[in-house]
Image (cartoon, rainbow, N blue to C red; front, side):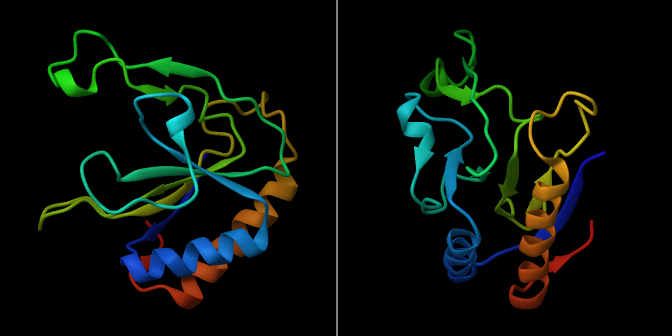
Length: 151
């Protein structure tokens, strides 16, 4: 099963969160979608806007090779046709950080680890060690950020 915690971070909180993540591990931030494969990999969370709501945090102490895919050529949103994304996130040593969606009825933000959700016997990284890091990250969130709690 996956694990998650609510994480409704303001932009200032995101900066502190990123600073903590960088102190805790050698990380790489990955956007959910980008025009090129290289553009998926960013140094920080980008300003809030269209398609800037979900990121993956890869702790590079855990080996993993991203597999890329592209959005369909027949998407109704012509601008986003053929954009790249990482297709193997559910079995990867990644934390998924989703921002709170805009508007009064927007979905809450969260920090999610797929853990054994879709690949219980196929994880190619040290799950107990990753879990220790996940617990340290969620502990920091509970102590420092607002809008944090169990989902």
